[in-house]
Length: 250
Image (cartoon, rainbow, N blue to C red; front, side):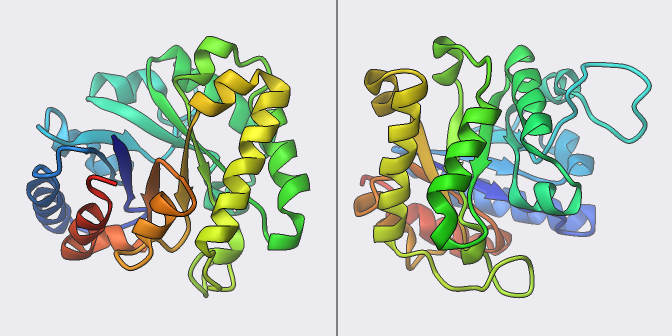
């Protein structure tokens, strides 16, 4: 079973377009027996899709406290209550634009687990040369005090910032399957040091960074990833479904 996650980011702008996109992706992806599809719309649209069949609902972020005087924040309990099963934590854009560091990401990771949400923990470096140092630190800091049992509830997404589309935060230079495979092995090496080789091999590791229908299969077959976090390509229903077609059964 593979997991394909759509991160719509701050798109689309109106309810009509959000509904049309969700319905088209849900309709296209339901035929794939070997894929778990997760769609993460902006928070203001989440309640529109509560109870959707064949598709798992995810949020793009959450706050680390469950309730209280935190203007503008959304808690994991709220997300769980409207039908979310997944939540993205530590995305590079949150780290850059919202100033989130590993300590904050760790708090959000724990909050997600406490609420029964499956966190999608993003780790990744600004440039390929610093992958080992940065990713190791992110994993060790973010997984601090996370138990062996809890590790099994977490999806780790390798998100090389340098591979994100140009004009956002990266160079637009593609991450090749060989690069992703090296990152996969490195993440397992770090998890082995923190937990054990057995748990490292069982960990769900996916790839995120300019994924499209042309390169998705390579990240599964060659890089040995178990799925993908899809950004821009998830805003075009036909392209997102083509990613499903490329990955289904691999």
